Image 1 (tube, rainbow, N blue to C red):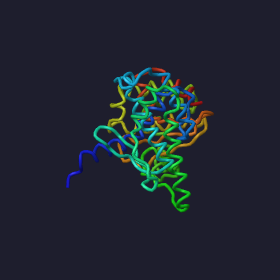
Image 2: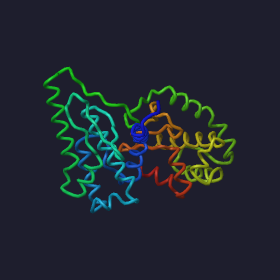
Image 3: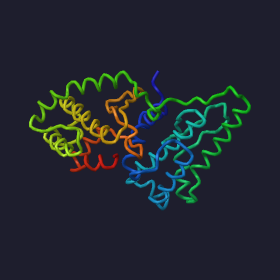
Image 4: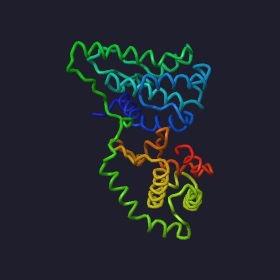
Length: 291
């Protein structure tokens, strides 16, 4: 039996939540905040930034703000599900978030809430929905103390830093890095320093002219070695750790770093390498941002 179109659309949204939130955090929100920790306070901070960015719902729906509205929509939905369980649903052309059925809560359109926030402009719309869901969760828990909300797993959930795939990838890159250096940049000094990042950009430009070319199968050895080196420069300079989301089945799922620097940044080295091909000096700027 063929999958209904609505379920195809729902799955496409769920599969994209990981990247939607990554773009929100890395490209739409200013450096240094707010921290996307799925708290009520973070919703207030995100709403405040949203109101600074756009004046009307029409402006938010403009093509140039699609990453912003999608990101805030996904973040609100994921925050509500961490509170009350549930899953993403699909209604026509928009994603809804439904709580664990035990709560009795009706599905909510996060996008509608976000648009209302821009229209009303009181800075309290996102947190108000969170508060209403929190009240329902409290009532359900009082009625059935054994009840625990159950959330549909998505790519936005915290992965396990003990991932076997990650452990193997890190070991393979570390063991193979001398070969990588001899093959791609034998005359350069790779000393894990900030000052080595412009050289890494130069080598990347010799190999690829775009992110698409960098990610081509024929450049996989170079890309992975360069990503590991960049990640290690960041980790040694800013602390943090490597992680990998085993739940995501996608060619665009790559190891990343988390808990970097005093502001708890994340970094996807493969993505950063692609960006530096279009924006000279990006790696140094990225290092300075997370450290």
